[in-house]
Image (cartoon, rainbow, N blue to C red; front, side, top):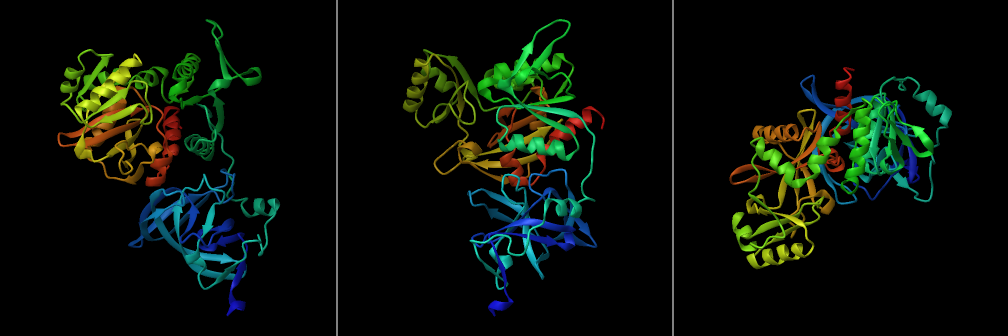
Length: 455
C-alpha cells in the first residue's frame, strides 16, 4: 500500500492542467484541512446551465505581471476559518491536481493569498490516501529553474504601458498599501511607493516642486493615491495639496481628507446633506455635564474624543455616573468631546460600505468581540458579507459625496429608527473587506483613476 503513495516534502511544485497552470509552488500542510489557491477578480457565472467561477491567478510568487485567466466548475461556497482566526466566505472549485507522475481530482477554495508565502496550499483532504509527507524534505519531485519558469509562462506575460501612479503613505508592508501597488502593476501601470516622511516641498510661484530622499524631484506623476494615517494628517495633506498644485490627479483631495478627519465638522457636513446620525452632543470641558447627558437621551451613551481613530478614544458609559466620570476625566485633558446616543439594538454590529467614484463596490458587516461594543477590525472585530439595502447604499453614496471623497469607507448602524451614519473614513483599510467579500477593491481604486484619464 505504501509503495502506491506519493512522498512529498514540505514544499513541492505541482500543476493544474485543466486550469492551464503548468507549474506552481505549493506549501504541503497536513495541518490544514482545506486546500487553497491564490485568486483575484473572482466572479461566478453560468456555463451550460451549470455554476462556474472565473478568476485570475499570479502563479509565481512576487511576480504580478504573469497572469493566468482561469475558470472551473463551482462546487460550493463556504465559510473558511484561517489559522489567524479570520473567517471568510470562499468559492470552492474542483479540478485535477498533477504532482510528479500522479494525477487526481481535488477540491480547493479560492482566496487572496498575497500576504502568504505560497500561491498554493495543499491540505490534508486533497492528500488523504494518496500522499505521505516528509516535513524535513523539500522539492522531492523536482524544482523548475528560473529559465524554465520563464519559458513555461512566456505566453502569459504581457508588457503593458500605463500611468505613473504614486502611493503616498507611511508603511509599504501594510496589507492595503501592498494590494494597491499590486493592483496598479497588474493593470499595467508604473507604481511608486512614496513615504510621506521622506517627501519635502519647494514652495515657489513659478516652479513648485516636491522632492524625495536623495533630492529626487517628484513632478512627473499622472496620479497620486493618498493613504494618510491620522497622526500625520497635516503634513500628508500639505503634500497632497502640493501635488494638486502641480496639476496631478489625486484620488482624494487634501480638502476632503482634512474635513473627514474633523469628526465634528464632518458630522455637520453630513447633517447639512440630510443624512441621519445618532443624536450627538459636542462640548469643550462642559460645566453642564448633566444636561449634556440628557441631550442625547441619557445613559447608556458613547463618549468620544475628537482626535480618536480606529475605535481609540471611544468609551461606552453604561450608567449616568459612569458617563459623568468619563466626561470629567476628558475635561481634565482640556479635550473637545462628543457624546452620542448608544444604539443598543445594533448589538455590537455595524456596516462598512466601501464607496469608490460614487458607487458602493463592496460591503461587510463588522461584529464586535464578545463584551466589546466597537466593531472595528483592528480591535478584534470579525467581518462577514452582508447585502445592504437600497437605502443604506443611498446613504453611503450621499455621505461620500457630501465629504467630496472619491474613495471612502462609510460606517452605518442599523437602528429602530432606520439606518444611521456613524463615520466616514478617507483611508479605509482593505484587508477585512477584500478577505470577506473576495472582491478586488484595490483594483476598483485603480479603475477610478483610469476612468479619470478615460483609459
